[in-house]
Length: 93
Ligand SMILES: C[C@H](O)[C@H](O)[C@H]1CNC2=NC(N)=NC(=O)C2=N1
Image (cartoon, rainbow, N blue to C red):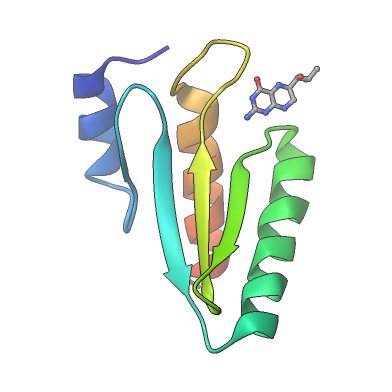
């Protein structure tokens, strides 16, 4: 697990992500519900490839919030930061 300070430092280079030692999150807002479902599917695909599975919440019709923590360790780890970097690489392209 990482400390609040370590997570805060890492998040400086992760556009859109917030969080602390417990978990990290980012919300994407897209054009509509189907776009949100599509984005959630991209996240699920990347998560399966990484074998690291975040919470994915579709809400408010066209928003997707991804929350990542490492359940085996009970908080934020390098696995969560790696997934966040990967998702930004795919979705902010
Ligand atoms: C056995 C398997 O590798 C583990 O259960 C993985 C799968 N995906 C996971 N995803 C997340 N977010 N946290 C985990 O601890 C975790 N563990």
